Amino acid sequence: MELKIIDKTDDEMHLEIIGENHTLLNMLKSALLDDTRVQIATYDMKHVSISDPILFVKTEGVDPIEAVKDAAKSIVTHCDEFMSVFKTAVDV
Image 1 (tube, rainbow, N blue to C red):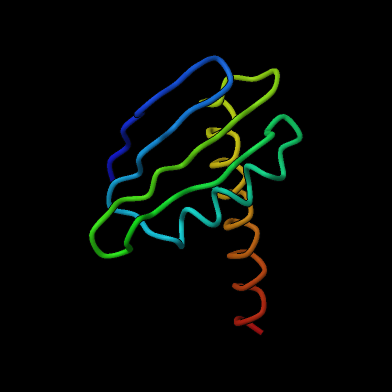
Image 2: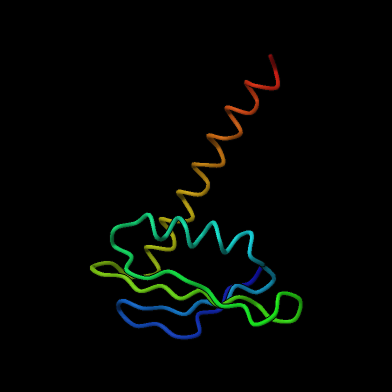
């Protein structure tokens, strides 16, 4: 995975996420939209096999980079919680 900031202001950012697909981008978009500081979170992928997704984030009162960091941390927390519950369920 490689990240490239295409365009950034104090409250907006276009971030190309090279080598990823809908799986990661849908989780990231969902986590961003759960953040009340995020006004818009969406992504565009022209064609899944020949283009990389570009994430667009618009925030209010927070740098979009911080919002993406917080969203990523939220995803990790959810995955850790799932692994704990799953481990308990399969070890029974």
